[in-house]
Length: 531
Image (tube, rainbow, N blue to C red; front, top):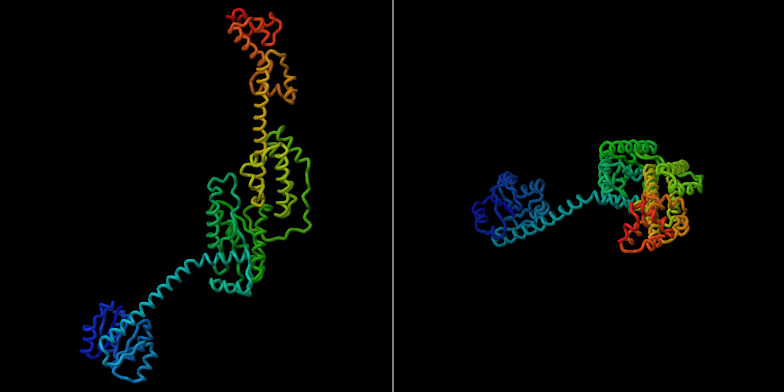
């Protein structure tokens, strides 16, 4: 602590400076003055924390000096050292903020004790003040997050009137009670499948960038911008005095349209916004709900739009089932090309969306389309999750499909996944059938092998089985059977079997005919092969 002593008697001044062990108590005498004017000149340079001053001094007395200090530097603690035991002096000193009043001749121990006590009080006050400053700084640093949390909670849950006013005041949020409020909800549009700069993992970063750009596009004087739920950005506009509801809505539209333009220019992706209607303070959450509902209309109107809230028509037409579509799709899986399947699903989807005048109806129609896919998959005895892969999650929550483009891409992916799974199933089945035929041939070479008979055993069409067998093995069924018979006969002859036994073992009853076929196949008579 820094101490300044003001005393016009040199002897007393020197005694106060040199005879009292100030340093032992953490106090340093930084300046001395012999009168009030000299003290004023030194105050600014020396910056004392405590002032020990006499009352009776030439040019400027102690109380006049105390009055000047109380006005200009109220943080300095003053201790009066006076030879007057006069109540009027003491009363005036107290009025000037003097905490202690000592009478001469006060002993050095008393003076030291008084200064030390004053220093301790000052240290405690400084510590408390610094702690308060730290708390205030911490509060200021967290204030933006607290404001965002309050505004988000207000939009989602609402508050009673007294709660809203109290919390807003605590968080320094100005909400004019007579103003009009309009909410807009903005979100990055679903990324296209051809997008290469960003992936789904980058969506949180894009959402943060969207909120940052929105804060630049919407001046703080016009409302509040804060992160909403599920990566959205909420813009809460507040009317200015004299602004009509129509003018407020026009301003919202202008700001949001500009925001979408800047997002496209800066991020190279598109965003859309839903705009709620103008409402009074306590109905602002209703405007937010309207904005969320309007944003969902991307599924109807497409990307990169600022969409105003429109109520869903009450006389909306129900979904009309199209039984022929499901039958055509099932036939197309096995008979048509992938392109034909895509055309079929695209046409059906376009027809559904054309009849849907709102997001709610879009999702009703999507339920119908998804149920068609599900019935088709289950009719084949397949697992939904195995067929659909990652797209299975969309069937559990169709509203995550947020635009026509995303819906169309999803329906095409599902169509191709069903087609590819069907082809793989056919390949697997084909391999299984061919393997069964080969096994039947191997175990029945001595019998009269007939493709028609095998087809009946396997419950398939003989023509289909003949074509399938040639496709998988590269040879016809009859050629394969003869090849296996000749190989079996040769192996037996080389092992010492008689020609008759070898012929009989591979289904030949006429030895001469067997010999003719054998020679043609191997270029040598059976007797020449036999060891």
